[in-house]
Image 1 (spheres, rainbow, N blue to C red):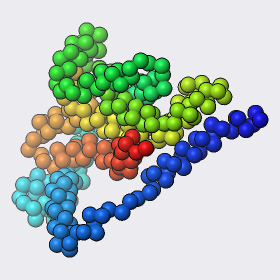
Image 2: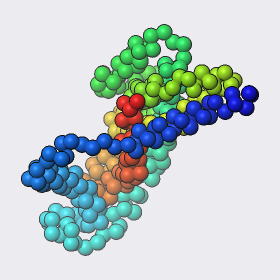
Image 3: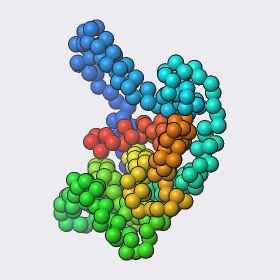
Image 4: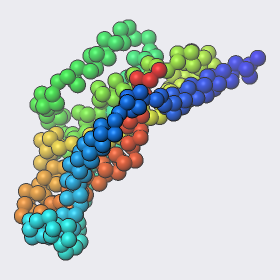
Length: 306
């Protein structure tokens, strides 16, 4: 009798996993696709091709221009794509304006900010979804108020607070105001709210603590949402520009985005060098998007699937 009872939570967890897998793999036929004429299909493909060209061309331009001289870039498209190869732009961009140190600072900021958002959002969403908190919907609405306010409005308050703490011109000041995210809390809350409460009650009867339930049952079953929160948080932290520029002054403390802007100001006439620096700054986010794309599309829609 005891062994049967102890297996109950695991069986229910496996059942939920099978249901989630079937929901993500099951597809329904689209009636509108059967009614499309060949002309409409051709127009859709032409529109997608034009949109793809407009999106891809700046990336191709930056990649090709980063290994060309300024004269070849300014001469025209023909010399841009078929000019002489210049491989010294990347070492020069790395050595100039302390780009290497700024990359390290960006990595520290990204890890600390993304990790802080993940921990605070998971705990807040778990408390709202499974805790005995009255009116969790209204509390969630209070958490979502910062999403309705432009970020520029809170910059002055954050600046004064960080300066009074004596953290001006430090790496900590860059990520400290952003260790909590309203969007990430909302994302986890929507996923946790649809988790079967029977499994939670069964684990409580088996003596499983809340922390163990959170990290053993809840988060593994919402892996896509976790990856979505990590990828979006990392991209936002890495691409931060306005706040790091405002709260830092020393080039050795700034992150890569303000550093690349300073590099562009210093070497405005050397277009190839600037493009090489831009690609160095953009490479981590490109890798994140390529490998995290499936988690982004799945995690953002998983909260709406029942």
